[in-house]
Image (cartoon, rainbow, N blue to C red):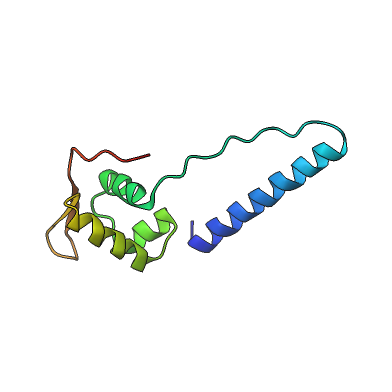
Length: 106
């Protein structure tokens, strides 16, 4: 799903939840308590995606992670510098290697 469509879907869901809560309060019923979602860090999401498919490109990672391709390149650079990722092969046709002992903070 594109970044814009994901944003719009999330916004619409938030507004619908707010409207349902307002309605339930107006008729005297308690609104359901929504459990806060655990936010997954973008870098952890990128690592997870690369474990699933090491041939991902910055563009496909951006679509999956919901950020821009430039943002993905920045995160990949940080992860390479930290020794968490290693690029094997050329930019076209190569793949990413995730260090096996890295544990996501999710």
